[in-house]
Every structure is written in structure tokens, then in C-alpha cells.
Image (cartoon, rainbow, N blue to C red; front, side):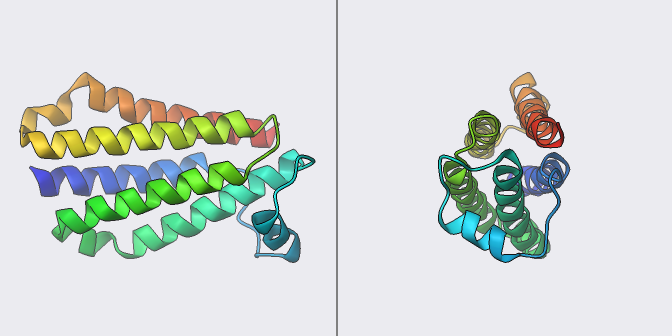
Amino acid sequence: MRTKLVSLTTAVIAVALLTGCSAGGSGSGSDATTAAKSTPTATQTKAEACKLFTTEVTDATKGMQSQLTELQSDPQAAMAKLDEFDATLEESADKVTNTEVKPKTDAFAGAFSDFVGMTKELAASKDPSALSSSGFTEGLQKLETTGKEFQQVCQS
């Protein structure tokens, strides 16, 4: 149960993040992106905020995807990686200061944190029927919805 849950969660999260955070392009790590990462300001443009968050989340997702096979066979390592990714997502959202984008990055980071918490609870329950629970489905939907909302604000 736990391995199946971790495998499912890891795959779903990777897809959700790549889908939800594809707005703004991944860029090539230009000097402007580097500057935006290190010194967010109150005058951060929407484009800068979107690029900053997208780049950092995409980079973290790539790291997670490269370890996907290993994580599927080691549930404890997978849970630790989800925690690490959760922290990275929160840090990335904290760097966004643009008033139009900030609520969307915070909502996405919050939905992810909630989903990680739910995943841990489900793994601890060892109840296979929990995967089909409405709470798990709602958590996935919230993650997808907040990712799309971030994408929409960045594309507008």
C-alpha cells in the first residue's frame, strides 16, 4: 500500500507541477532570472515573478523526476523527498512579491503542503481503500486547480 501510494503520489505531483507551472517558459537561466531569484523586490513584475517561480519549481521537479525509479522502491526516501520538495516550493513562493502572482504561488504551495500531509496520513493508515477517498481526490483537484490558476495569471 505504502509503495503504491508513494509511486502514485510522486507521479501525480510531477505531472501536476509540470502542467501547472509551464507558464512563463523555463528560460535559459539568464542574468535577469538569477537576479530575480536572489533579490526579489516590491517592484517585481508579473513576468519576473512567473519566471522565478516556474524556473525554481521546474528545476526541483527535474531533480525529483530523475530519482523517480529509486523513490518508488523506497517509500521512506520518497516521503523525505516530498518534504524536501515541499520546502523548496514554499521557499520559491516566498520569493514572489508581485501582488498579482503572489496569491497564486502561495495557493499552489499551500495545496501541495496539504497534499503531502494527506499522503503521509494515507501511508500511515495502511488502508488501501483510502486511495479512493474523496479527500485524496479533492487534494489532487486542488493541486491541479491552483496550478492552472497560477498558469492563467501568468499567461494573462
